[in-house]
Structures are given as C-alpha cells and as structure tokens.
Image 1 (cartoon, rainbow, N blue to C red):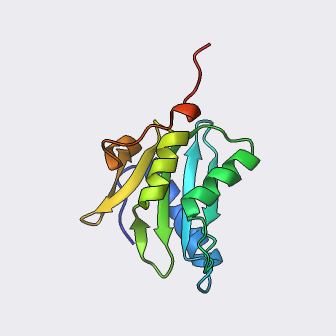
Image 2: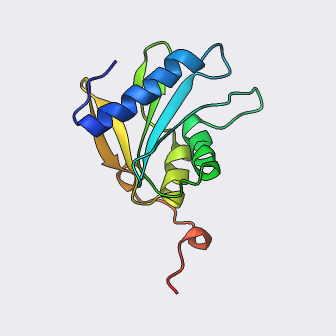
Length: 137
C-alpha cells in the first residue's frame, strides 16, 4: 500500500482500501473508489465488471454520490483489490470527472506516495462538453 501525504487524503485512501479489501471479491469487483464531498462526507463504491463492459469504480461513485444527495465532490481516489494500492483513473473516467467536477482533485501515486492532482492536469488539451457546463444566469 502506498503512503499518504495528508491526513484527509489518507482517510480517503483508507476508506477505498477497506472497501477493496472487504467488498472486492472475484472478477466482478476489483477496484474501489472513495471521494470526499464538499460537506465532508465520504462516498465509496466499487466497479461493476461485466464481459460487455462495465463502469469503473469512479463512475459508480458518481452515481452513488448523486443517489445520496452529494452533488459536489472535492477529491477522489481509486484503490485496487489484492493490495494493489492507489491506481490512476482511466481516460474515460478522467473525462467524466472533468465534465462533472472540473475542480476535483484526483489522488495519484508515485514513488510510494500519493499526491492530489487537479483532474484537468490529468487530461491536458481535453474536450469540453459544452452542453454539460453550468449556466451563469
């Protein structure tokens, strides 16, 4: 498991790691995600693998958060099962996170440490989904 830099980030990694350890069994659920909402709540989720494809843990988390009335996420992390530690989001997840939460920070691991990175930094020169941008009435 990677070490963490900040107390809040450690809490998120620990929450995702606990879900990965206790809920990710077999081939259907192999990655867990945790995110901190603007109000401090932590939301967790697991991926739902299926041979036809399936949503990553980060995408399941977005739906779970919405179902729980959480509409602002500040930081997110994904952790692999079998003690794989913090893993980066795939390209599709990076784009969806940017579209839904352009200010979200993503915890990434390098050299045994985690650090928060703005999602836009993980997806330079990204496509901006104009129909999904907030209106300024």
